[in-house]
Length: 233
Image (cartoon, rainbow, N blue to C red; front, side, top):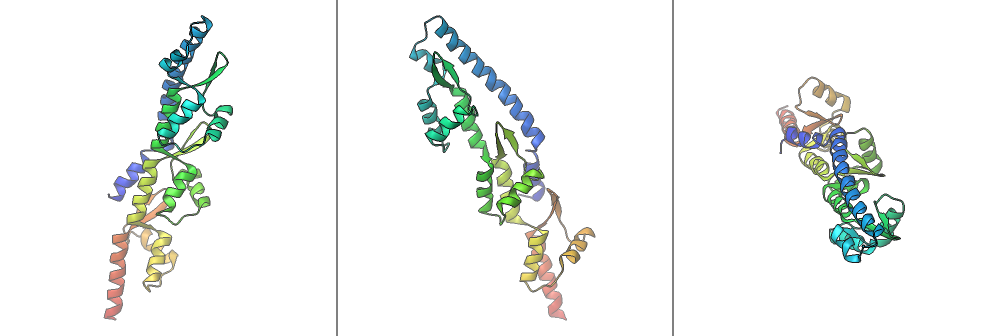
């Protein structure tokens, strides 16, 4: 994939777009929650609510909700799940003294985990391919060069963004990496001298997230040219 395509893929998930999309999803979610909870409460008030009605309406006990979530690949212990329910970061309702969780809430959480990483998960995935500290990764999120969105109390990063950054790493160097590669090949050049060549357009590069990226093929060509020049001397 070309760098322009990678950059477009990552920038398509900018924070403004993510926030707008999530606002729409949450509007639909809360509407569905209201419908099922109100229907269950009405049945309870008329003393017609039975256990089968809860399931029919899509209202789950804590055990059922946790089981459904883990079955769909979300790694969370029952204790942690219960804690999030108590802290109201997972929506629940009380019907006749019984705490229930709408299945649409579980569907939403499962979808989030299939499309997004939490901050630590995103870092761990990126770290497999990129030499970056956790602090530096947080800095990129704060500077918005790594797009993210806050949902509830958590910040989430689209998996597509991390995939794009990994692809970028596989085919491109940033300035520091490029200079290190040149030094490793025995080509002595100061960083500021290398950056002047970039400024003058003598080395092809692209800008992404405030950083200049040089294709590995371009740098390899530069290394070959420099070594050939030395051999002719």
